[in-house]
Length: 310
Image (tube, rainbow, N blue to C red):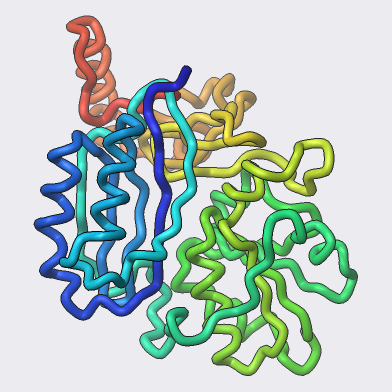
């Protein structure tokens, strides 16, 4: 059985004292040998952590019940998956202006948010011809998988989403908007923004793609491809099984099995997406780094920059 429990979590909630929470949260994670990344901002908490199941449960209990959080995280939800190898190398608790960066200060999902749609009801919604289905993730994520019929905004960062809306969507013509993202956080904030802009019927997939892949049977699924995740698994598929994609260390692009066979792919050094853009100095640096990864493996150690599949 897989050894490590992975918990993806977020909650939009007012945390004016978020900077004071950094040290105690990091300490709690260290105490229980938890690794991953958590982001804290005045608007809430976001991140993914992994560890042994009992340790993860202990940290989640701490977040939900400790008086330090004034009960604000009592309703903190999380999504679970498992891995055979630890998907993270270290624990980081970072202070940010936003837990997911859009760059529009007026947007507050804690006050206004679109209509949540449960995974079991999602297929019926996006099958409606009057519904515009919008993938709020970035282009490299959409590249490896998305819902049937969904629009790819071709953004490189979430900051570009408001401009996409301004240039491509019209509240007088696009009456129903359904959005989705990996775990739910981006489309929740995007739905709040859309409502602020005057769009009336805005829906988003509750729990994101991960919850959909976990709960909707593959034979009735409208998902096509795999779902990129921000850890060493790279991608997951139905049932949250580890996918077939790997990742290029040089440019961080997800790579399909066919791309891994390309003559332009060298593990840890280059891939078809970045081969032509790498300078000789960069190639030398990456080659030396990959040499250190191999030497670490021979010593039975894990190099800090090594990529591995779970």
